[in-house]
Image (cartoon, rainbow, N blue to C red; front, side):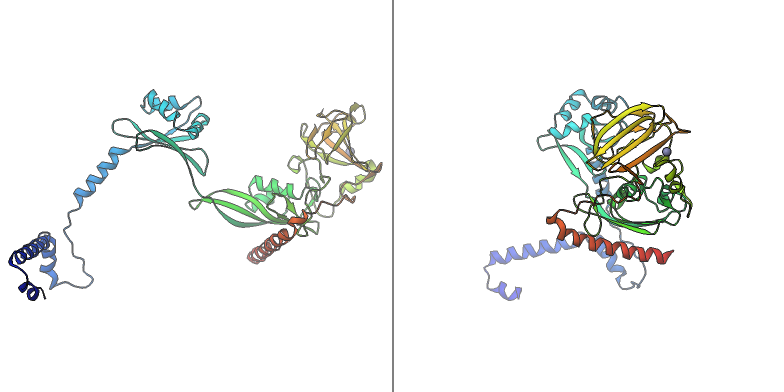
Length: 431
Ligand SMILES: [Zn+2]
């Protein structure tokens, strides 16, 4: 083809083409050292045998490494107590001018003023001892980056790592305490506290827990770059207390509801003392000392260390905060028209008469003032002026979820319950 068409071309063009072709031919031949080595053995190549190729790459690699080293030398500096940016920069051999320039690198740079002992910052310092980049990871997900722009000015930005959320399940059975059962189920202390908080309006974890009570929890776990960074919120949970099943579903408003959409939150907490402070919150099966004692003194006793905080069982107003020789330091709270709660034997009272209190607010601390053999809270619950057992009295019904949210909540609840029940089956099968 080429020869044929060349015949028709004027002579100077022929020369040109010949020259180009020759040049290309030389180009192909030049790097032929390797190629010819290959060619020489090609007739005797065996399958599965390795043949070394003499490729000269060392120079290139060395050059690249040298270039990176010239740009940066990353060093990590731990923030010590009493440190600030200037002190750390001095330790890194950087100048006060660089400290100033970095501190002026935009509003995000102000985060460097809030560095805490134990934090660390990463500094890229070049061979001339000048700062190139600064990185400060102030949380598991966020890093302040101070880098140079094309005008060699320092600019700040926040780099955020995406958090990956996965669902996990746990189940436990009470053998002696909620703490032990929770730990055995690999729940964190926070998760055990959350669990007690979710069901704290229905179950008196201080006194009503029994051997054989059990729980199932569905919760989130957070990961960054595939690395576990911590447990997230409980999404759904079930607690079986003395044969009765309580189920809670977390909704997007952060509150927990029954599967029917009633708030888990109620007018009164079952116990005005956090279970973790109670000296003996576990009672063996078929033993109900509180009920036996109930008739004798019209109240519930929670034995706890002196100084243990006591909470208001519900929103209300303090109608009495006083001392006498029988009740010791005592506080009475009126809740609406119908209900009064009484708390006796405090070491310290934390509220005054006429004061409005919120459910869960600390109103005093456990003590043994008045007629008390040892430090404990004596708690009474009155309905229309009559003493009632706070754990068996029927209480005002909890608020249902907002009407606008009902349909959506029903979907969430159905889905989570199904997940929880599936996991329950799997966990039971594994036991
Ligand atoms: Zn008592």
